[in-house]
Amino acid sequence: MVRFLRNFILASGGYPWTVIPIEGRDEYMQALKQASVKRNIIPFAQLLGK
Image 1 (cartoon, rainbow, N blue to C red):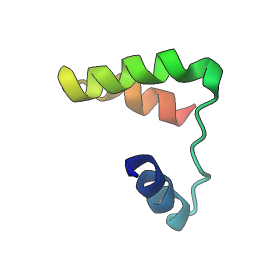
Image 2: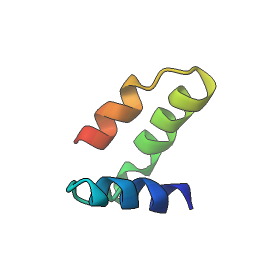
Image 3: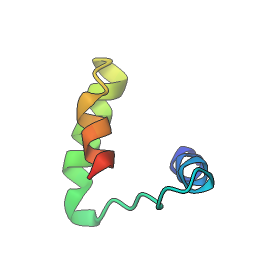
Image 4: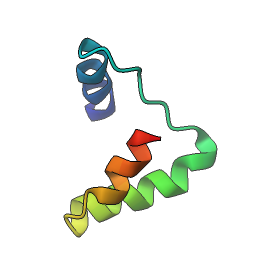
């Protein structure tokens, strides 16, 4: 649900939907872990910026 809401907010601001391909799942999960566990959002923000 959170991914949908994030994409909805981005789309309402004129940004494209964020789609993480299955090949990028490991990188996504590691970046998400950094953001949620270690409170380091930089890897997650960089991943979404790609």
